[in-house]
Image 1 (cartoon, rainbow, N blue to C red):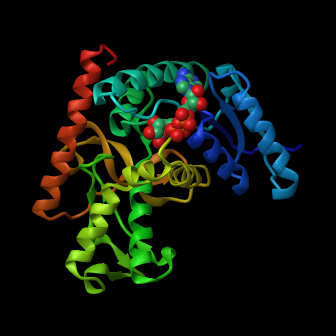
Image 2: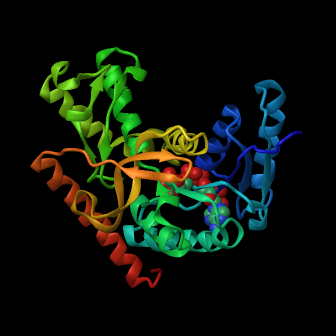
Length: 316
Ligand code: APR
């Protein structure tokens, strides 16, 4: 197969999110995918299965599975989804330690085998894991970013569209801050074909949609009973990958390194980013109300607590 000039995408973690991200990349022809996992046979089996779907789905790109990080050599973009979900009885700190050690190990491998890649982290707790990745990789901050805002915004867009019975593609929104209870959905930047939702919906309906967005991950976990969301998280990561690899320069909410923007320093958190071929080309500073700024800073405090946890564990 002729693959010259086709981007190489490594998906680390061949679980629900990683394999779904790989599938979306293949369906879009975004690049040749290498699926990596520590479980023997899992990435190979899923990659072969996806390859066998190719003749029907008309892929123009390839998918291979491996347990060997050397196979990510030359990757243009790496999507990291490896890690554990939080299980009953597990504290936030337990999860931080378990996933922290996984992310730290994986980033050591990326640094060695794909030193020029742009890295998108999806593993939770998101904002803290991206900061750890940034510190471990030692890459410039434009090449290390996290996926959460695309997911949270997509959920809010879907809820607004469902409420108003309009096309989801007409709805735009921005959800900033950390990925979790302290996320900051912005109704003033939520529109239907440019019409602010404040003109289309009663305040209490907007409040209900914001609450449902905040609980978006939890709602899926309660329905599934085992496991957590993966279609929308994978779609969020691939949307970012698309804007980067195709140099589309889309403005998307992503966890990005802040260096004074929004009055925050040396932290990763959800903000609108212009994504192009060099990764985060620019952080867009929106005009926020005092209340929204306070909510964003509260969100930052939560992330800083997690960063402190990483320090205590000796991971950074
Ligand atoms: N290298 C590669 N793969 C690893 C490693 C590692 N060091 N450690 C764990 N994995 C793999 C597991 O073997 C598993 O196949 O990561 C995969 C995780 O898949 P799932 O358990 O299905 O989890 P998933 O639903 O995909 O979520 C992964 O994304 O959205 C977040 O909160 C979610 O942190 C979680 C992550």
